[in-house]
Length: 522
Ligand SMILES: Nc1ncnc2c1ncn2[C@@H]1O[C@H](COP(=O)(O)OP(=O)(O)O)[C@@H](O)[C@H]1O
Ligand SMILES: [Mg+2]
Image (tube, rainbow, N blue to C red; front, side):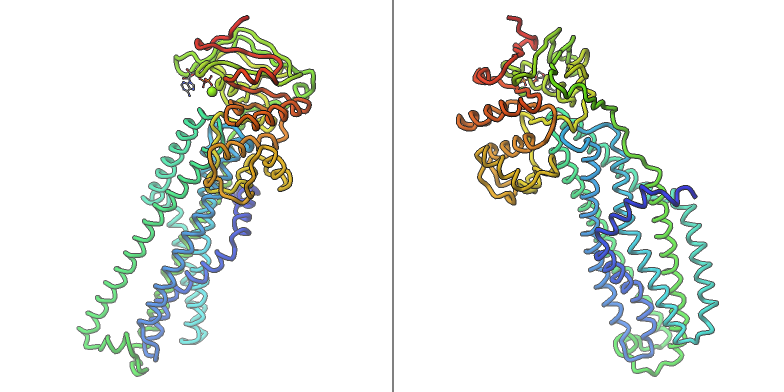
């Protein structure tokens, strides 16, 4: 019973419903038409409506509802997955935290429940009610009560059977296995992307994987509808065969009833009630699936966050940077070794060195996105690993934007509250004169990098880290960047990583690294 009221699960489902209820209502209506097609066809026996008409209409509506359902699922799943990915990433800039499974699974369960089980259950429920109303008009009201009783018993039995059988059903197991595969693939990607220290490629990967996943499911479903169609055709042929054997003119029955076959009408009435049974079972199946999904959703918890201190102390000047016994290895390979170094944030701090000397490694440790093998980087006495990611803005060496999103959307991924004016002002200053609604896929690499820089500058963080940002810009761009960094230093701690001697004009304390990944001691 505890599972039946989970505020988190209920809120999640409610939000999805609220965001997509028109589609869901439309889906329910279309699916109901399909579920009603067979009973209507049965009902039409002995009337002027040819049997084939409701069947064809039902099939068309079913195809339409399938298309709609696929669209809904794609959009729900993508938005759920991306939201979960971002939650798991710690919201603003950073790398994925471990144990994101729960978040993804929750997204999967909730979107599935909303896009598939809820409309189907409502449609089946509505169709059962309509069939009963039809039947009661045709066969007299006194039949309604016993028939409803029978349907309720059948539905109830079906529900409990499904509840018992569901965990053993092949399809459930297969779906779970596939989800697990997909999740580990996403995590593996996330792990790789951890190397580039950026959120966007991960989110883009999630989006892409979600789309692929949806496409795969869509194909399966289209096949299913094909099978259903063939099955109906075979049933029809079988029926025609039986009718012909019995000497009944089925051509006449299917394509042009004249209202004469009264005995067939009686048969049709019974068949009508019989068709209500599978529809009632459908309600049972989807109700069970929905409840199970809800239960699973209720049991899930967001991934545990690595505890992070966002202590006030480190934010208040004078704060300094202290490196103690820092050793970073990738596997067995040494990437950085600094026994001791300290710097003041009075001016921007510079990290200089040739390619491969360990600058990006240092920036990643400082940004809290890479755990040192040994030792620590302390900002105002707080180990970098414990600084809240919301307090850090990081411009990676190779930032990636989501190409399908506009400039503004890409900025809002990192700074959701940045106003249009703020965005325009900073982009103008960086020399990017493009409309905010332009897709970033249409921009050059240099232009995209300016957007990555702009959003880091817009993020009101306590620590700003730039990896080789100066190397992306032309002379004029660099001059502006250095100006900006000088202004930023008054507000927050700034660290710039560079292989160019020119940064020496703007930085205060400098850490020099050499090819052997060691600190150069003057
Ligand atoms: N993800 C990684 N896996 C293994 N080795 C890496 C990884 N990232 C960097 N390295 C290695 O660590 C060393 C330092 O790299 P990096 O910090 O990127 O240097 P820089 O930024 O100064 O060019 C290099 O030898 C590089 O090959
Ligand atoms: Mg580098």
